[in-house]
Structures are given as structure tokens and as C-alpha cells.
Amino acid sequence: MSKTYIQWTNFSWHFMKGCLKVSPGCKYCYMHRMMDKDNPSLVRLMPHKRMLEPYGLPAGTKVFVTPFSDFFIIDGDPWRSQAWIVMKNCPDIIFQILTKRPERILQCLPPDWGPTGYPNVWLGVSIESQAYVDRMITLSKLDTPERQFKFWISAEPLIDEIDFLATPQLQTAFEKMDWLVAGGESGDAPEGTPGVKYCYRQSDSKWFNQIMTQCAQCNVPFFMKQLGNDAAKKLKLLDKKGGNINEWPSRYQIRMWP
Image (cartoon, rainbow, N blue to C red; front, side, top):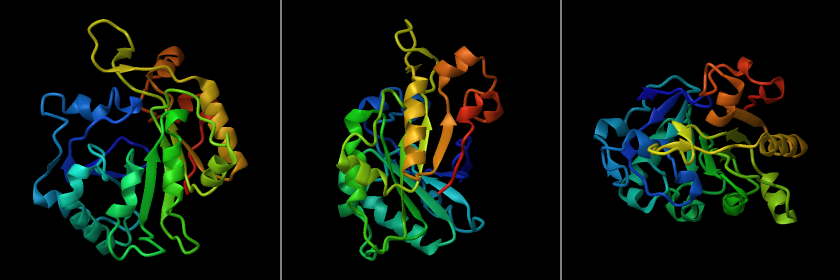
């Protein structure tokens, strides 16, 4: 299992790789960039030993599940049940799942999920703009009075304004979230640069400020992952991936946990 520079987790669990783009947030996906010469749109199972990697990790370890794919993509249906077994058998490990396909979650849960779920699993959705905020509503419909698993949101890459309190329905869903991670987009050059395939789009500081305010208002823990390469260039940051938050303006130096 590989350690990772992603600040909100400890290890990446790559038992499955490959994904299909479904929305604008996928446009410059780092997976497609890193697997550019290895058919990144082909979803494939990695060697079986990868499936067993979480066994033996120290208690409390946070594991990002399939960062080079989408755990709920239909192509992963043949292997997902094996992964659920590993997660259940490692109750002291935290498994962090992100998806842009929340409409598939319910049909893909293990038979013994029940009203509590697996307490060591965090189910999350990626939301890059207001156009996809309904992913949060879909996720929130899995809530039960007995729920022990966590809900979370990754607002990264943030490419437009998001108002999580725009409607009563959105606010109700947002108040059920246990965590929110936000971040700008990384890439080689600004979007539109001739000859550059993997670019980054601008993230307006006002977008982050609004999310931070709404998280505080609704008691949703907020974690700023990275400011994005656009801001990193303007601020002349030495670490563009968010490894040194002391370089940032103080108002963004927030890293809370659920």
C-alpha cells in the first residue's frame, strides 16, 4: 500500500485503477494524467495482493479507497464485494470513499450494511460546482437515526461557487455532513495555455470563504487541502500541494477532522 501526499489520509488503496469522466471536475483528473500512457479509461483489477493490503495496518490509519478510480463505478461491480469484506475485517482502520456516482451507492452496499453501516467507513461525494451539489442530497438520503458511518464532501477541484444553503433541502442535507474538504486545482499551466494537456482552472477566494462560513454556521468540520496552483503561483508558494499551510494566509490555515 502506498503512502500519499494527500494531507487528509495516510495511505492509498489501489486495488482498482481506471475511470471514466462524468463531469467538469474530471476534465484534468490527476489519475488520467498519471496513467496517460496506460489507458486510464480502462477500469481494471490490480494484482490480488493489493486487495489484501489493509490487513496489518496500525489502528486508526486512514485509507483512501481507489483514488485512481471511482469505488461505485459500474465497472467495479465484480470486485466491490471483496473490498467490503476487507473493510469489515479491519474495523480499526478508517476507509475514506469518494464518488461522483452517489446514485449507485445504495445498490452497491454490502448485504449486512443495515441501518448503522460500517462505523469505520466514511462515504463521500465530490462536488466541484453548484451544478453538482445534488450529489450531497443523494448521499444524505442514506441517513438513518442509527447511522454510525460518516458523510463527507470533497469540494475539489473547486471550479465555481457552491452555496450549500441555497435551499432548505440543501441545508438539511448539508447539516448531516460530518466533514468537508476543499481545494483548488493543480496542473501544469493555466487553462488555455497552448500545448499543455493538463491545466488548472482558477479558484476564487470568495468561493472558499463562503464554504468556510457555511461550515462554521452548520458545525461541519472544514479541512483546507490546497489552495490550487493558480493561487500558489500568485502567492509564490514553495509547496503547491498544501504540504506547508504556514505559507498560506492565516484565514485558510484550517484543518479540522470529523
